[in-house]
Length: 140
Image (tube, rainbow, N blue to C red; front, top):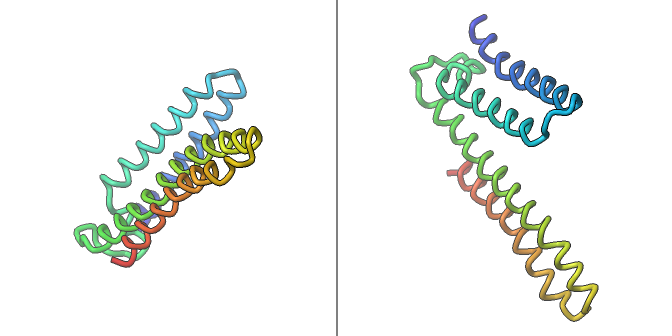
């Protein structure tokens, strides 16, 4: 039981420590781009460790590591979270680039407002599609 608790605490401590170290490095003048890549590498390492050692996913309910049902349930939630998260990032990028262009087009000619706002709505639709896929995953 103590081993399970250590495995549950390890990813949290590792990620918090990486955030503290990277923020300190940025304050000392390191490249923010390199810091973001370091954070992504830290997240990838924790994801790999949690995937390799499925006991972390089973520790909350005390199920055996050989039981695949909790692993499948955890992967379902992981898939739903990734579908929503990645689609929201994509939608944010689309709206972030489309909205200023729509504002500029509407400022030059107010007749273009209706056409321009459609592109912003299409970017928001990406996030809605991701949320819909997540709902289907969770209920399926």
